[in-house]
Length: 284
Image 1 (tube, helix red, strand yellow):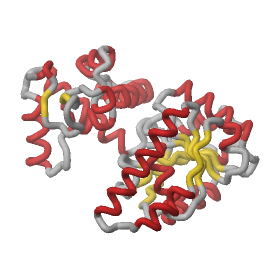
Image 2: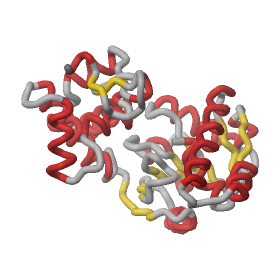
Image 3: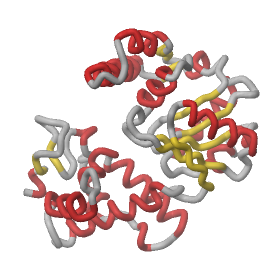
């Protein structure tokens, strides 16, 4: 998500610091951006000059302090872990200029809770990009309890400058996208868990019957089963309703390290292809 966000901002003319504590992650991120730009060239969406200009606007930096010392906006895109995000926002608040807006790409964690560890809660907001960022048009703009009208308007306008479609929502567990999506994915996993149908059968029904571009189990692999579990836990804890309780099969798969594409196996086996073409041996 981080490299996709950096890609989109840089392509639209913004100077970007791509920040990660891992030098290897930075190299991988830059390589992914270049590969995605090459894909756009192959589709005649950009030319070589636009690719070169985009890459020239991105600086890879392995220090938060250095990376945010002179910026107008930060978009945090760390893993969906509350403690990690709170520590990052404490650092962002400490090292960035007073006027800097601090945004988070969280897909479910409370903006209000994140803002509370800063001295600028009015300048903390959610920018939930969809994956893959260069392709997907939507950005959920999430107002925390204290997010100011001015900051919200600025981020809505900025999102439009990226050629995205911003939708303003309020700060409740899962916001809109994942409050609706994750129970569907969870129900698909329950349908598999209870033996109603197999992996490919469930995905085929939803693709051909409901016109979904990919089935819910394939989508879960794409998102990351650990991320799905984290979001469902946020929903379950936030609302206290049984319908949000993660399926035991999902819990077991995450515990076993079967996280989807990122680990090479989830509901499908990705050892030979990143496409969902081969079922995991567990579900044959």
